[in-house]
Image 1 (cartoon, rainbow, N blue to C red):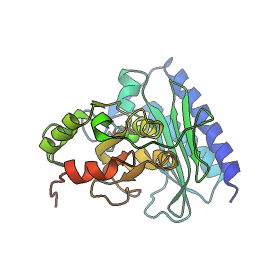
Image 2: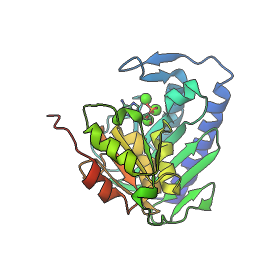
Image 3: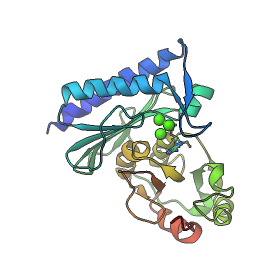
Image 4: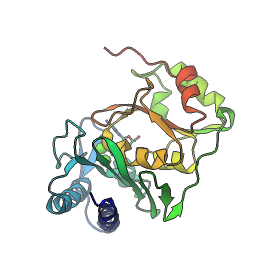
Amino acid sequence: MDWSRIDRYAKSLIKEAGHRIRISFYQHIDIETKADANDLVTNIDREIEQFFISHIKRDFPGHSILGEEGFGDEVNSLKGVVWMLDPIDGTMNFIHQKRNFAISLGIYSDGIGMLGYIYDVMRDEFYNAFRGEGAYLNDERIPALRKANLEEAVIGVNASWVAPNRYVDHEKMAELIHTCRGTRSFGSAAIEIAYVATGRVDAYISMRLAPWDIAGGMIIASEVGAVASNLEGKPANLLGQDTFIIANPALHGRILHDFIRLKDRT
Ligand code: 2AM
Ligand code: CA
Ligand code: CA
Ligand code: CA
């Protein structure tokens, strides 16, 4: 497999898709809801996913594609080459803020993350990694993470998970946010994972993410030593929705052990 060719190809598709998203603000954007009133999707999410898929299917017919908007393949196994794509991660930000959203792409070979990309479209911050070759932000090497200390850490977490919820003991979550230095919520899982990789935040926690939210970011973040898992401490789930944490290597174990109490949802 010529991974360098795939890397160049993916980069140019992502840059072109970013351009298309930026010019979409000059046209009418149709907003629809999906699972509930706050689960939004637009014609641009769909058009960008179709843009990727039509090119990838033409040029790499043997590869499978898992995309959030459902135009790709039904992916039930990680065998072969699988592209995991979120055309717009942070759709609510795309609609309300016109910024703080990203294109997220991870390319896996038999379940091993080979190429990861996160493109913060409006900030023009392009994060990428090639397995074993380090992670880059706008072509500059991102240094390995230095050990963080929880009392001085900034944690990315959505306020929903500190309010009563069906996933975790929210009082333990409140203890976590009082123990660390501060919290932030950016509204795009991919951007939050990119921020863990660059040390802008020291951990990111979510109760509900899909494979396309985390696929690209995990490849980038693992190159700098970040540790990812679900909230049970098992490998992050690339085949279905699950809980998720990615953190500085010095924080991952302590956060899970001391502050995460999962509720029994069976
Ligand atoms: P999206 O914008 O692509 O839907 C918001 O906190 C983050 O969580 C975004 O990355 C968003 O991705 C993701 N997200 C929102 N609702 C979700 C859901 N029901 N399942 C999985 N991820 C979700
Ligand atoms: Ca969505
Ligand atoms: Ca997403
Ligand atoms: Ca999306």
